[in-house]
Image (cartoon, rainbow, N blue to C red):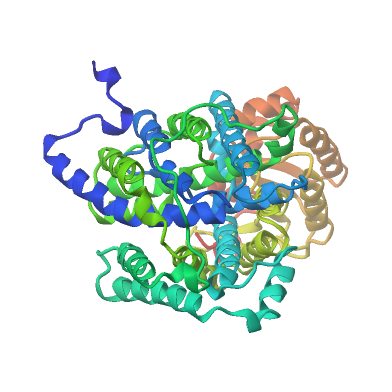
Length: 568
């Protein structure tokens, strides 16, 4: 029986039920207008945003491992979907059209398949390859794109076509067509939400804005005075079945869009689940969450809606309301189902500027100014990575931004391995090791160089490693008698590096330099044996302790201090 209980709800206590239900009600109050806004980002009918909170949310609650992660429509994946479908170049394809809705459903299905494949291949670890700087830059770029995309809707003027810069130029050159009634609804939405966020942060200001402004719109006949409204909303239970109006060739057309969505879903959902599990001392199983996310997207594709993702903002709301498990999300799904079954007709008079105002603020919230400032102060090179990623997202395209984010992250991993921090090590009179950057012309003591290389040796960096050793030996102030390699930072050596090390040992032999190895671990020793390098190092020249290796140097006596220890 225990195995039949969803992983996210095992160990459930009856005392949590009341708090979970209240948290679910509070989440629904915020999430319902929010996902309606996300549907506009995706170019989808408003009701499809509500559908993302029903079957996809229920399937993740039953199959995922995270107790708090909220799965539903998300601004980033919605932006990727919109940009990707728009770039397909299909003649006559327009946002909101039946063909658009069908392609969006197909993208969700393919995303589910890709995530399922990632689970079978145990690729959950790939989420770790997107650095914090890349994620901050990516979400900032999405925020800029999402917020600026709402400006024409807030002003009541046509949206432009083309790239981001062309669209901004379009609305700037059409300011003479501004609808001030539309501006009033958009501005009122923004003001109401900000006032509640400032003075009543626990109360959902977006709900107040939606309810109040729908009432005003209906009472004043806003649609008859040039204010665009949502119009008739087809409610009812989500339609079940395969997306309609598709052809076999559509799969290849939207595959790259689905792949981009899947990468972001994997990274963002894993990061969010880890963050909240750590906060509460819970365990999280990313591979199991991949199952939940996969089936959630399959459910989305089969229920007339679009891709879903783990939402950090909605998960934060649930945490603030002290929700404990996915029972809160099941409550939200039940309330949303009630809305689409009974209350959808009330949405017809909602001005589109109201949704634009909600989405505009969501976009601004994604622009992580504080995070960018912290990166700039603490790590300038990673700030450049974040800035380039952000610019790529809004300046080139969200899909291209995802691919660039992955490429930059992998490049950064290789760069750090290629140019690790390395040191020449000495020891003070008190017997403490000291470190300074390895540069030609320095030594640990007369005739002694202790070299520390802080990375695995592989084909890309072994040439640099060998060149550094040669330069240290050639430019040392005194003829080098011992070269001690501190191997504590070397976990492995690939075949190419093994071949190059043989040449390096030959070089040291010709220079009459004794090669000494300090602090090799067991795995490294076995690797050296396989490459027949271990046999070239006399046993008396291998030390388990760095200080012992330095003190064994025949010159005797501790060398003078040569620098400061590395940070951390």
